[in-house]
Length: 165
Image (cartoon, rainbow, N blue to C red):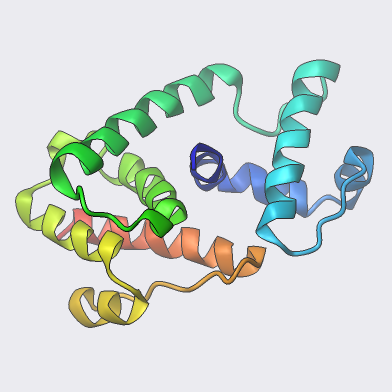
């Protein structure tokens, strides 16, 4: 779940890797448009940057450590207090939400009760119900990276809109 969160937080770095055929060839990994291949490529590039001193494209270890602190703070707020009945199969949605929430609010205590109600809809309902109740579309991913990327962007957009409501 944390790796999905990292990719959502570092979407620009992920896009940079995927758009560079030279970089992909140097990693000796194939991008086959699946999310799993993107996760593998991201991890390989992290390792490459740490071990070989390659040019920094992705977040530093220090940055990711601070992201983990944010992730843990939001995850605990969700599961312990605000939305404890999130379905087990919603791990990627949770990861993407936490990335969007950290950008929109910074800390869980800055979220109002009305905003938490909307967040609960986002995290516990399917795309149809989200669109009906929140008036916002959430793309579905189906295991392919273009859909997953659209879903990340959709969750980020929804978080921004909820934060302004």
